Length: 352
Image (tube, rainbow, N blue to C red; front, top):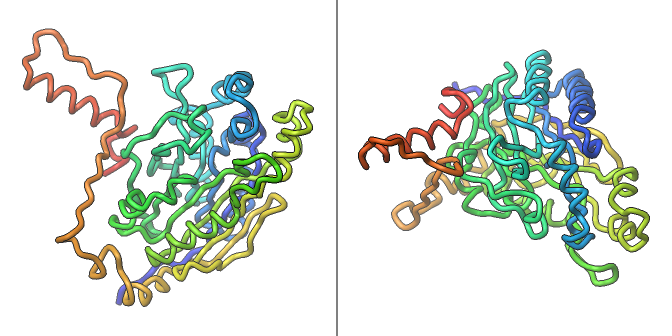
């Protein structure tokens, strides 16, 4: 008889220590230890936890945010840097899987930063690196566009784990790309707040949006969805508002994010955190995904693959492909393809 994984998952409703990557990693390691001691085997952190979410671009004009952008860039981290290495070490030490939202920097440019989700295995391995495909609305002032190289699920002892970042959980094609790989556990990471309108004019109900899209993906895929959202602490509001009362009111009165865990019927199976930092837990039993797929299985029999086709380009972006002197066109094309392919993975086993 087939055996389905059972485990405890944790979603961290956590605030970063703004612009301090080292302090954020230390805090994350302490939370990972706490969650592991409570029996969690999969621990998810919010979008851009290392080391700030650029909410300032929603409340200040672009000409007023250079200082914040410079600080974000200075605290952004490299995939092969010491911060990720420390997280990999603590994951291995506690035998847990960790999903972490980061501001990812690159050697190609001082100012290029991606909104990236990193999935770390219980042996400390790097299972996946996914760069948010399209920064949303005013996020474009901070983050570069990602690519399809991270549209992958990791086949683990806990199931097949995939992740998308914030607004791309609304992208039906990105979601289907993961579902079609047998995704059984999804991680949705979100911002702490997301102001869109002046006070008194309504706005984007972030909590409702998270519940709708996270529940929709869980229901559509008949899977478990771990939702980890950021928390905006008073000290961050102090930093960003710069003593401007209008900006402070916008930040304080914008709807807050929520963290929760949803089952394959799209309903919460955990507590919900909104107003305070903390960790929510839920017991996951992937056997509960089986019967709902008897009703509708959008990557199985409940589809028409003779009618619909989806093509996904999983080649990572690179700023340049060099054609070496003396190479003919065929050789140059081969070299360019090899260079692009090598750019996808940090090591040859990452995306096997």
